[in-house]
Length: 182
Image 1 (cartoon, helix red, strand yellow):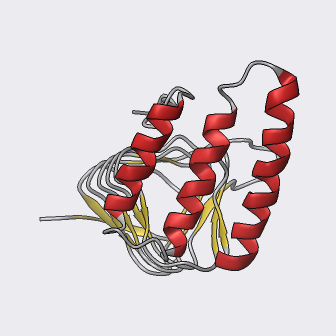
Image 2: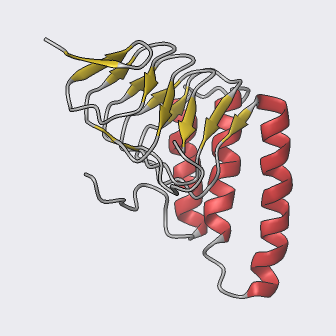
């Protein structure tokens, strides 16, 4: 899992994009008004535009993506760049104050709540956390650096995680203590 992997993001085909959007909408239980879903729509558009090899087409789409990205960032408080590979059933459960580095990576069934920061520990170090499957991130958590978060991990509200978290664990506190789940 330590290797960065390309995950459920599609290959740029229009059919794949609509399939991903339909799936995202089902993850949000059909709620078109969910700000997390808005962020996912812009994310999907941003991934889709990379499928165009001709610069004359891709560049205007990139400009549109940047405008939509900034609009969603201002309206929802969610900074979620399209460079982040994500797994299936990725969900931003509450909006506001969410910052995700473009260097991060997520497995399947990950949930993020409000006030979460996922990013670089040091500005010189261009790597961010890699998340496994079934990771539940509590409100206000800060997860920073070149670390790996295993499968079936819960990160408590306001935890500051600066080191690897093994599978089947709970990370709580500042700095986070790792507790094995029973």
